[in-house]
Image 1 (cartoon, one colour):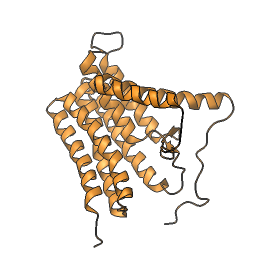
Image 2 (cartoon, rainbow, N blue to C red):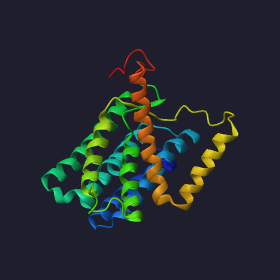
Image 3 (cartoon, rainbow, N blue to C red):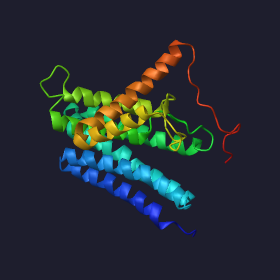
Image 4 (tube, rainbow, N blue to C red):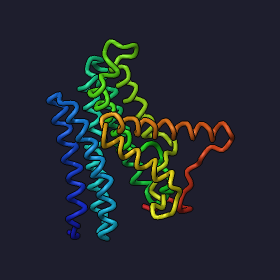
Length: 250
């Protein structure tokens, strides 16, 4: 058996642990804790690849382990959270909507693994599963902090949760490009205004994370979709360009 790298896989294990704990918290109906564990899993997921590259400890094992952990943390955990939090009153429809979300997350991860060497890394092909899961989690946190939307409102919480499950699941398996920021040069010089915007976002997250995190994820989705609609309207639809002429050979 090939040797495996300890540190990056420990970070991936922390991601998996957060996903598992989110599931157990949702079963106990501790929905806010379940949502925060999904957010924590997303943080560990963002770190493991960077840690592996910095330590020059990337491996095929780590890639596969990361995908399996992501399915738990960003597929099963948010799907079960949606069901136990708001979709259970819909009965079979709610269960099917939750399953559809989990299935789309699995398909999204499988497609990402297949296309990782052929599709440009500047954009995600469909919304990334951590972002979709983060939207679900931060929405639950936002609802717990503000009480909005409430059960007696014009649009009930259950209807929004059902819409989230169907819409996010569809976006994950779509071909709609979403910016990944992976090829952004963080060392490049920029204007003072960009720094101030970044600082303001960090301050808002620190002051009211239960509100700001949902606003940031929602703005990312809305802005990305609006950008795609604008390009389509102006006759310039964005096509994901391959980084190789031929796909991976089996």
